[in-house]
Amino acid sequence: MTQADLETDQETLRLRDAFRVFAWQVFESHLLLKGDLDQRYTRFYSRWTRSKIRSMDLSQLTELATERGFSIEQLLTIRECYYCIAQPYPPEFFLSD
Image (tube, rainbow, N blue to C red; front, side, top):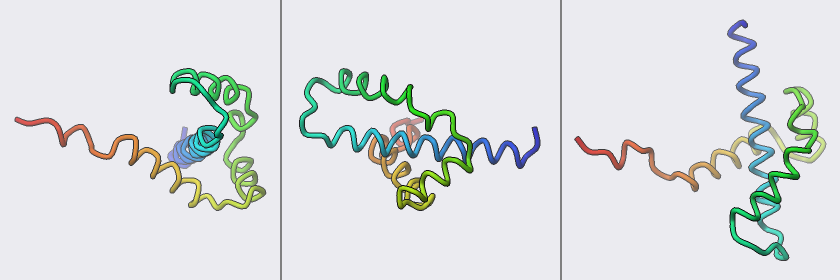
């Protein structure tokens, strides 16, 4: 695998994960959902595993983003913000010598 292939694979994984994060946020915003977090995520994940997005390549993901009115940068920013909120501090912050 070449360096370009590796970079494309990594970009594809990040963009696919950005779609997953965005879908999760939309799913979570639905007011009629009940149950604890584990139950909600289990329902979401059962839907996510059947999503066509999981098998799309980079060009297909890019096309889907454009069709839905998003830029790649917007989706990756949503992903980055989600992970910053989920883990606002690196583990090293809590470790001491």
